[in-house]
Image 1 (cartoon, rainbow, N blue to C red):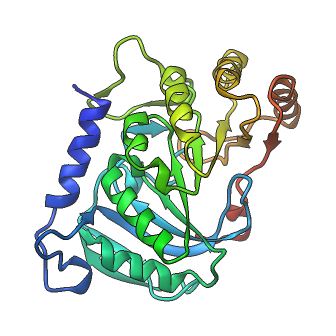
Image 2: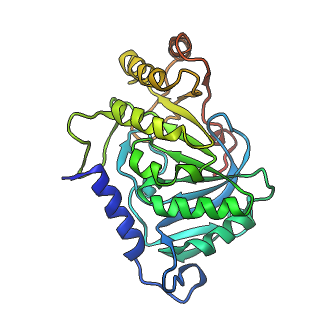
Image 3: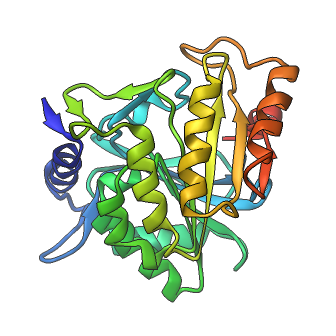
Length: 290
């Protein structure tokens, strides 16, 4: 088995060697050009967290080293041979290319899909911090164009975040619970470290970004002990960090969300110790957008 950091390095290597460059514009890397493994790029409305409902361009990178029981994008678990980019915002019509993608070209394509300066650009996955150099390059390029970057991450790779955190405007950091999440195949956590340890280290680095919030997905398997451990670790960093409790959208291995009384009880439990806590479900499945 390999370590989490080794898995990140393996994914980064695959991003630059998975497919040889072709004559197509998105893949014509050239000498010294920056590239990455991509899954898709499309425009929609943010469906989660405190920025819910805001126009967002989603840039989905390939590869993930976790397996969440409710995962709605298992196609991102491994780097893919190709990727797709929406031809115009909201059209759900896509043009397909081969990986790896040239990042300078990608930044230009992202910019054409973002209708206003206030549009968020979500760097998501998979797990985007398996490719930290790409995240830094894209975030800096977007900033130069006056765009705002929104990193959506599972919140475990503190060292990778440290290499690009100053380039990010907003970090959406998941807090994973072992009752529903496990490491991917051949990936193990460092000895003696659990999700809570890794999340606390990550959160301390994330405070160097423009802003950060924590998102915890609640399922029927989520325990009070897991919630309390999360509160303990967040409180050590700052009790003022916003926390979003997200009832699971039933999918894959999770067939139902917790009942209303359970959700309200967990909300009250967290609110007793942290100052900015919200209960917000996913909204994009309600109106059927990507």
